[in-house]
Length: 191
Image (cartoon, rainbow, N blue to C red; front, side, top):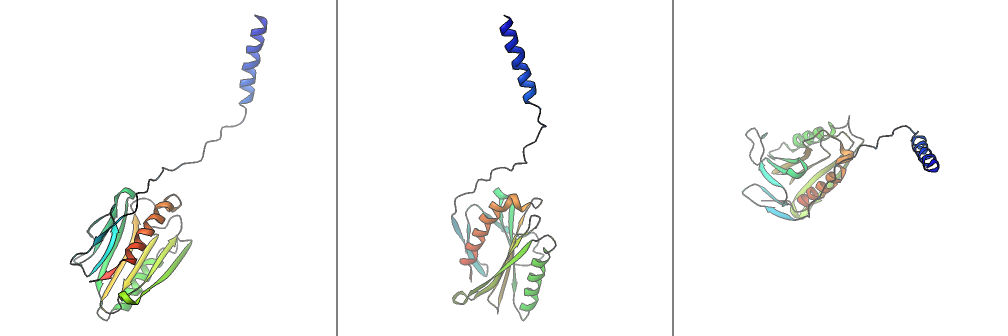
């Protein structure tokens, strides 16, 4: 019996002595994001443009259109994100639209770590433009683009998330949606 008490006391002492390190909380984790399988459908209506967009997205008229025709929102509800598309007729004012698009992209400079731009030149589709990839953990719109035929049509798109920007944790979704936007641009045509 004395031997059992000694082992019990020794076991209790070992337990208390082994737990002397300070408590260290685990780092904050993020929810796992399930990405759907890529598949696309046509947006081909009476609008002056058409393209393919993801089947897991919905299109609605823009609430910010202020009387403008052909402004739409492509909503990615499972990611709480919206791609805002605006359309303008070009009537000798292309420079104004290009400057506005540049200004809207560069407004992110205070929060951006980098802004990468890429030219779009597709002569066979009369499609010219720029893509802006804006990197930074607190950037509100990580991806923007503009498209024009340089004579009649101008389209601008900007991706926004309906959450407080934390693009470090949103990066897998940003990359996923960037691929979808690239597909949209690669299938974009003027009607």
